[in-house]
Each structure stands twice: as structure tokens, then as C-alpha cells.
Amino acid sequence: LAHFQVFTVPKMLRSVVETAAAVAARTPLQFVRTVTSSGHLSRTIIPTFHFQDSLPKLPIPKLEDTLQRYLRSAQAVLPSSVYETTKAVVADFGAKEGPALHARLLAENKKEYTSYITKPWFDMYLEDRRPLPINTNPQLTFLNDSNPAKMDQAQRASSLIVSAVRFYRTLRDGMLAPEIFHTNPAKSQTVGWQRKMAAMPRQIAWYAAFIDGAYPLDMSQYNRLFSSTRIPRTRKDELVSFEEAKSRHIVVQRGSSFYTVPVLNADGTAIAPNHIYTAIKGILNQPLDTQSAPIGALTTANRDFWAQTREGLIANPTNKASLEAIDSALFAVCLEDTKIGGAVEEDRLFLHGNGRN
Image (cartoon, rainbow, N blue to C red; front, side):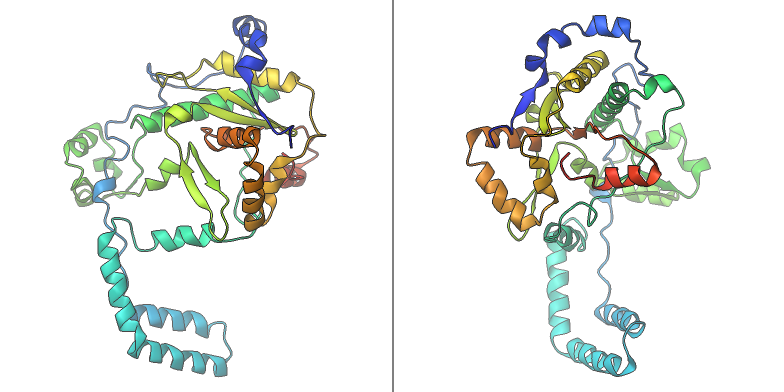
């Protein structure tokens, strides 16, 4: 596994990166985005997470209501004889263990700000030992750009990277508009209403919006969009997030090689788009490595097997540093080297591919 290393592009391709201006002059780039003077995609009046502190918790249903819903669901799929047995078991549970367990659930719920379903929902995914591809991970396919000049792989990848970094900075700086369901947009989608909400204390802001027919939605999972990863562990995986100081780079995979590309400066501003493009172009110009061990394929295995294998990998200092660089990346980008023959092949490639990239 000695070939499993992370190469930092500015060191490996310094001469190329330093000529970014010359490359840009020869190849006019198509970075056309509506951004503010500070480089944000938007400048919201209401801070991004302004409503989070006052979001109402999902109420725990009454025990009898839960039992009746369960029986209605069971009746639809069980033979009548089995359903009658199930009905008796449910009635016994409701008369014996149920009330005490329900009281315990209510008491535990008072200690947590998040809704009662949050932990078991996350645990359901993190404890699932099946491989992530197909079973958990989805894929989305963007339409081709109408401008052929933007469809070059380096151009396309660089444009997406630059846009994602702008989105990250907009989110990080609280400039992304909160997600709100408006039932009376003529009243609530106005500058005046936004200013009124921004002036509301965070502890009551959600209720103030509710009075005007606007329903702010939970945005807690936005904090997992960037600088976060799922570490394989035996029996239950771990979600880990990193501070920006350790996460100013992205990781780019091509073939069996991994590269780190800086996308943020030390002051939190974004690296210039031309530098991103030059780094991606430099990676694409490197000889394609398909002979080294395809470490990426391990992420398609059973989660316990991947967890145990990872422990063996990080016993090697080089591998440990490489995995830390990958885990702490702002996000990951794969540069595919496969020719796509049609929509079905495209979907299969993006959903799982051959597991090597």
C-alpha cells in the first residue's frame, strides 16, 4: 500500500500553478456567477440559523395512538390469524411495559433540544453494516451546459468546485437565506418582514414567523454538508466534522491517485478560480494510475470489514496522514476516466461505477 499517498498539487505542480495567469489568458474561462462583492452567493437579511434556537420539537405521540397506527400498518400485510396474535401482543404491551417505557421516553426527550426521532434516525444509518453505494448513497446528474466551452472536464470540474466553495462561504458566514415555507408570501417575502424577523430574539423568532404564516424549517444538517465525513467503525460508524483551519482543501481522486487542492486562504477567502482550474488541469495531465491498489474500493465493502481494514492501514504513518487529509477535506471530487455511452451507463457510473474511483 506504499502507493497510497496524497499529493499536494501546489508542491507537485508548482511550475504549473505559478503560470495560472498565462493559462487563463490562453484559455478564457467561463466562470459566470452572480456573487456579492464579498464573494458570497447571497446576502440575507435574516441570518442563516436565526430560527434554529426556537424551532418547536417534534411532539411524541400518545402511546395508544402509536399502538393503533402500528396495528393498522400490520393489518395491511399480515394474514388474519397472525394479525390476531399481533393484536393480542400489542394489547399486552400497552397494559404492561408500554406506559413505563413511554414515560421514560418523555423524560429523556425533555433533556434534549433535538426531536426524539433524531438519534434513532441517525443510528439506523450509522449501524447499517451494508456497503454505502446503492444501499445508502444516492446520485444526481446535472444537465449538460448549453455552452460547449463549459463542458471540458477541467472547466466543468473547476466551475463546480468554485461554486461549491462560494456556497460554503455563504453558509459559513450566515449569508444563506433560511429555509422557510411561506403560506402568505405577499406578507412574509418582503424586505420589511425580513428586517422584522432579523430583529426578533432567536429564542422566539420561529413563533413570530409562524404568526405571519411563515414556517422556518430545520437546517441543522447543513452543518454536515462540508468538512464532514463518516468514519467506519465496528458495529456503528462515526460522523466527524473538522474546523476550517484543518479543512481548507478538497481532495481530488483520479484513477488510484489522490490529490489535495487548497481552495481557501488562511483568512477564509476563496482561492482564485484560475488557480483551481490550473490545479485540476495539472491533475488531468498526470499519467493515469490504474495499477496501484484501488483503496477507494474498500469503501464499497461491508462496514465492519472496512473498519477493520482501515485500522490496519493507519498503522502505516503515510497511510494515516493520507486518510487524515481525505477525511478532513472540505469535500471530495472524482475525475472519471470512463467514456459514457448513454443515460443508463451514466447513472450506473455515478451511482457505483467499478468501485475503483
